[in-house]
Amino acid sequence: MFPKTAAATAALILAASAALAERIATEAGPMVAQPVVEGLDIPWAFGFLPDGTILVTEREGALVAQRGEDRWTIDGLPKIEVDGQGGLLDILVPRDFATSREIFLTYSKAQFVRGSGTAVYRARLSEDGRRLEGGETIFEIARGSGGGFHFGSRIVEASDGTLFVTVGDRGNPETAQDRAMHNGSVLRITRDGRVPADNPFVGQSGVQPEIWSWGHRNPQGAAVDGDGQLWVIEHGARGGDEVNRIEKGANYGWPVIAYGVNYNGSSIGVGTAQEGMKQPVYYWDPSIAPSDMAFFRGGNWDGQAFVGSLKFDYVSRLSGNPLREVERIEGAATSRVRDVDQGPDGALWFLSEGNGALYRLVPGEGS
Image (cartoon, rainbow, N blue to C red; front, side, top):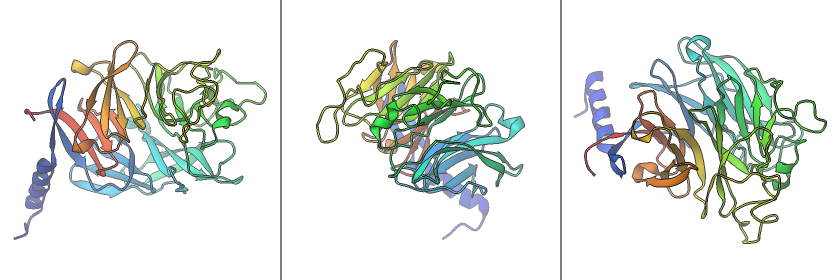
């Protein structure tokens, strides 16, 4: 017999979600991974609005919103070039959303020269939360690239309100050392896409002025810690996924130095070190295919970092000075973890591409 009331339907939904919750053992005690948003198609990133609405991007070009049991798709997105690893990617809900109602998206944009490139879109969310208004692409990388690889594409808000945007080498390693291009860089722009006057290469001939650091392979994770310091997580080739503490104007070496090898087993560049090139704080070998990064605030995990693994299906906990992986949080829920963040409820949330679901990790009874 099927329920005949909305309340009965809601009760079944809640019961189904409870049945799908998974107990996971952690060093902080037993936890439960609770699915909150399910049925997602290649989800890439998520964010929270002050009214409790959760926003999730799907790479194929949809922005999904859910509040309680109500779920809808938001209209008004830019024209997205779904190109291999490219599509609709990251989302940023800035600190002043309650007054500005602005959100920022990164996506792959078709470009006139050839191929597609990483771009940033700014728009205002309508009062009813159903559509984006006044949207504009405030930045796109110079020159597109053929092939749908290495878009990078995390966007985070700095303590001064500027935006950091990561861009991969687009599958062309040598371009990460060419500052006439944006490829393989961490960029810093204002909220309207302009170049901040104190960027390190402003006024230098032959250098893109948005560049904050360069020599990155495919930085798909970025976070600002409690001190306002930017950290970036990037994919290596075969081995050598890196945790990098980003310094203004620094070169992080790709593809001159690396802690891995090419997929065919051949060596990369000159080795693992070169004068004038920064070393990673930590690296994984073998590669875990890291996704996003978040710094936790409060409780037993205060100041510690969490990184998703796409390859080995877990959430990595990093702690210490310098940061080192100290725990792997894993279970059926952590299939291809694409994004991690601390929610407004204080819990650790993670997005499983493999399960098409967004979970929250909360204290629970023993597993």
